[in-house]
Image (cartoon, rainbow over all chains, first blue to last red; front, side, top):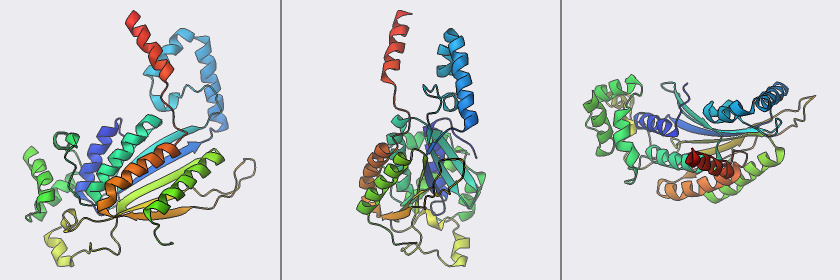
Length: 172
Length: 136
């Protein structure tokens, strides 16, 4: 159940999964706002005190450290909001996740949901979608089962999906 | 499960769901999308045929509609906290494949507006950083 570091990585892997298992795969996006627990508030207060004690070093810290837990909150009781994307295929048990806390990313992420939606609907990919072709072939690390299936199938697939499979085979 | 809503109804209810979350101050909104497999033209072929072509579903003859579901999290009253009983709100819509792009444009708008709790881009900070870099 990996969390990907970048949304493009998540998108690439998800589109591969959707190509292989378009009927069973589902994408859940979860927007959650949590009030921090008492211990979390204490932790944040401690962190702020520490930061106040060492102002020089603290200035570097929030930028370089991992973004999700850092949350350089002004108010330690401020609720945390996250947006999580999860692609799950119950057949193979594959689960791909990406999490963000940035509002700026939402638009782009929903855009990629739309593009993945085209896979689900079995529509051809959009022409302007440049990232798909090259990247997908390069990062083709989805479940090996998929490739086995592709070989076992051995049926002259229709042109829509044929392209994807040929790429995978060519890579091997 | 009630009937699927039309896309327009779905967006108004989605707005309400986000608004509900905002007034509550905490909580979760779940959105799920998957291929519509029930009650459509997409029928699995006979078992023998499936064995011949295990990837039958990767190349359907017609585009398939997509099912979008939205729910909140149900919560129970708990003593000692300010939690209240919240019933589960649950609704769904079906997007026909030809209206997919238009739907997702609206969907993105609705989500951007609804997910107000996420961190905004800090413009002031960025400017300061740039100035510092230039000086250095």
